[in-house]
Length: 239
Image 1 (spheres, rainbow, N blue to C red):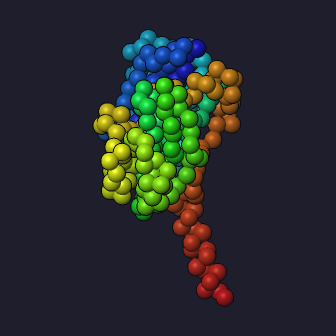
Image 2: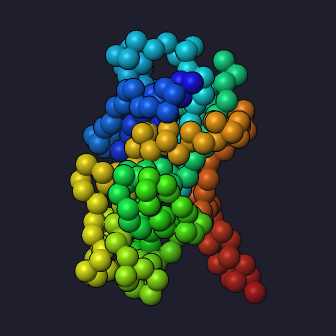
Image 3: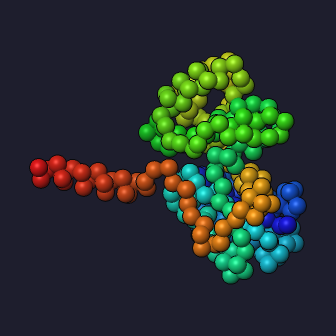
């Protein structure tokens, strides 16, 4: 089974092709360009280089969030656009789970973090042992101080690796001998991890139609938050 994966939930963008559980082609960019400019051309170039026709792809997967609202929507739309004409199955995976696969070969606690701004991170914790990843908590948005305190209380005696584009933001809040930051080449979310995280869902037939594929948001988009704040202030002014 050939699976095409894409990832553009933050600054970086990437794509990959997995065939029978093995990554056979991939591409990654950290050019900080708009994903609407880079993602589809990168996918086409990868398909051409791998001599794979889009019609040969059996399923599509994407990191559906958390992440940049714009980036997640671009990725979802791209996958829908490729899968819908062929009525191919889709899988949306947690961006944080996909990031944990960067260290699937290392026994550790993967502390996956994405910059959520305002001293917050999107986070999930995963135990990785003998190539198996076990989720320890739901995806969540929390203050860096809160996450640092949790690591001190729950994981002080375990090897913890901070993974993700929120590494620099969060690293300033935690200083423990058992906590290290990820290597540069394994720090960012990638389509390889998306494909690996989606494999079980495809194997079990736990897929979605292109029309049913939706983003995963942990909080409202900024525009909606500002609107609610404005409405709240207006209501207070009327009282």
